Image (tube, rainbow, N blue to C red; front, side, top):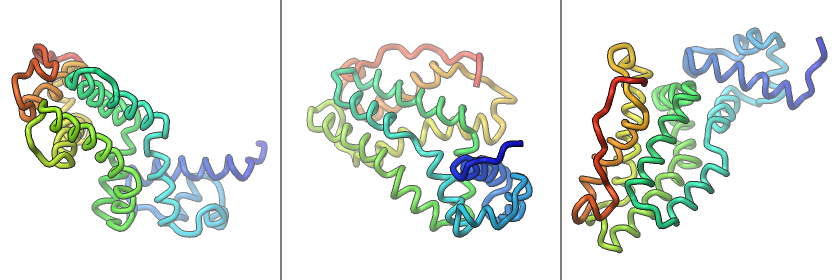
Length: 219
């Protein structure tokens, strides 16, 4: 078996650690277990990561959205698209991203319960900027008279919270075993419900058409 380069070895450790941390949490995994699962010595783990906290932080950081995703969102929020279209797209993206990488949400939940320092650092470094991007858009809509006067950051958190809670119920708490949903219907429904609460005038003013019924298809 060819020997891995230093960069490839680091990626291997990150992949193994992510899987174990997502399954057992920060406190439930030791660096020795990570080393054994990767087929290396514990000394090699510490060659790449000075502490277990450092390893966990890099695992979390690797789960953050790449810069090009943030750039696309910024461009979309500057566009002339109707709010309903924009928020439907955001909802679908949140659902798709979590479904494609279920370890991410589990890691964040574990970090919030077990390692508050790292979870707070992750929020400050990554999550807060996404909320602020969305809050900035909401501020502009308030100024334009399309949205009613609300706290923009709370409104942004409320929308993402609706979508993420659906994911948690379905995929983490087992709701998908009892009822499944079409993801496009979920995205449209969440966007429509949120906009119905924040719209200053009629829903037509923010581009909300009929969201249709949510059918039992998937997720």
